[in-house]
Image 1 (tube, rainbow, N blue to C red):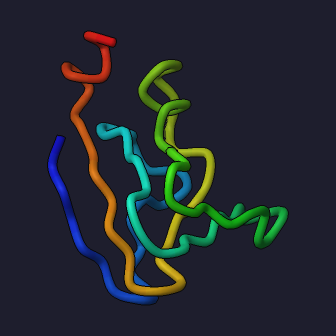
Image 2: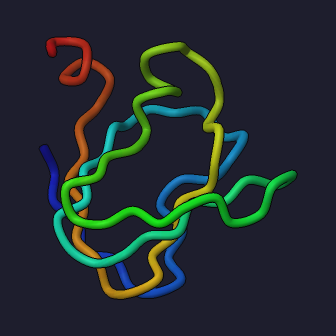
Length: 83
């Protein structure tokens, strides 16, 4: 897994783009939004995202952006598939 620190406003994944990584939130708060529904949730430490695009082979279903300074860890498709 690769660790990454992100600042407020940083978009980590964008709805409609291909998904190539799975993420786990270690610190901070992230917003989850969809074009047709607006803000649909908040992710906190212990939450994860990106699994739908990897598992189902579909584009990202939501945009995830940092609300506060945050730390996430991610893995690529190959590592994800091992689990």
